[in-house]
Each structure stands twice: as structure tokens, then as C-alpha cells.
View 1: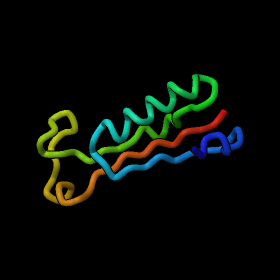
View 2: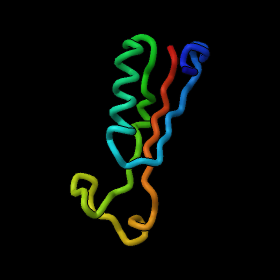
View 3: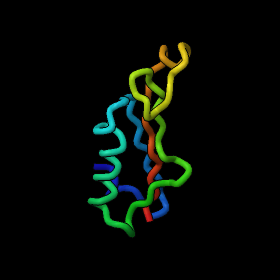
View 4: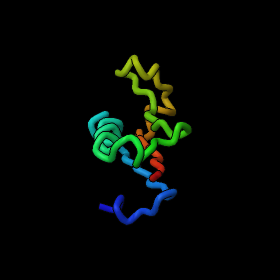
Length: 80
């Protein structure tokens, strides 16, 4: 809803405190697809971040310290 109000050159930060791909990367992929290639660009220095989980080998093992933290995902999108 805010994207149309953002001027070209503006940035939108999407953040969710969820570890679910459907609530993070899938939302960004869908948004970028709807906007078109020349309208929205994902910042290459902002690919998102998920803390490793003990039950997710793709993310690597979690230390005890990491296991006690919440996970999050972020994506910085530039309007062109």
C-alpha cells in the first residue's frame, strides 16, 4: 500500500521476525515479480538473514547462544 507513495530513488525496508520462508523471501520474490524488473530492485547488500536453527541443516548448527534468540528476515528494496 505504501509503494505507490514512494518516490523513485526511495527505499522500502521489509522486516519480519519470522523464520518461515513464506513470510520472508517468498513475500519479497512475489512483490518484486508484481512490480516488474525496472521498478523495484533488491539491495544486493541486503539479502535477508535467518539465524541458524538446530533442526535446519541448510542453515548450519546453532550455538546455544543463537538458539535462545529470535530469527528475523529483512530486505531493502530500492524504487527505480
